[in-house]
Image 1 (cartoon, one colour):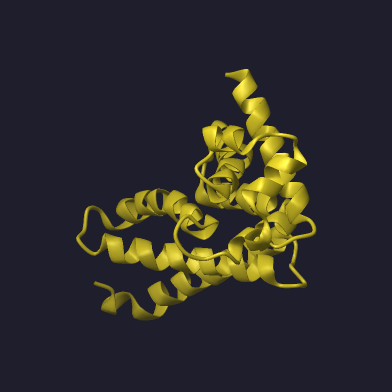
Image 2 (image 1 turned 90 degrees about the vertical axis):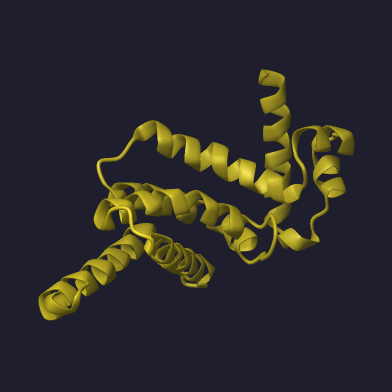
Length: 184
């Protein structure tokens, strides 16, 4: 198995290097393989396509690390996640612009939905409307991350999370304070 990871890491490094100068959509599997002296057969033995490689990079670099740490609250998780994205923003700026089937945006959304679902269920209990709430927050979070990273003057992760926290908690506080009688 270690040889498998060496191959995967070499392919990941090649893709990252190519993405420093080319848009993701313009990079072919052949270019990735050529960059690290591997055959296309080796690539397809490990990955379905270049989208699968991007998702593997995110999973191995970010998700596994976050899972190992364990967090007391969602804001600590958010801090770490945003630090990772900010540190790797050149790479993710290019992957987040790709839309559609197998895109990183779709994969990232699939990862955050269960996390949000747990929080929504903790707040509202088991409710038939939970899917609506989860979709709303997952879409909003994905859009916020994209807008933040794609901004040419991308603010540091700490500031982004601080603004996000202020926005969400401020709105929540205002709703409870002013509309508590109307909440169903």
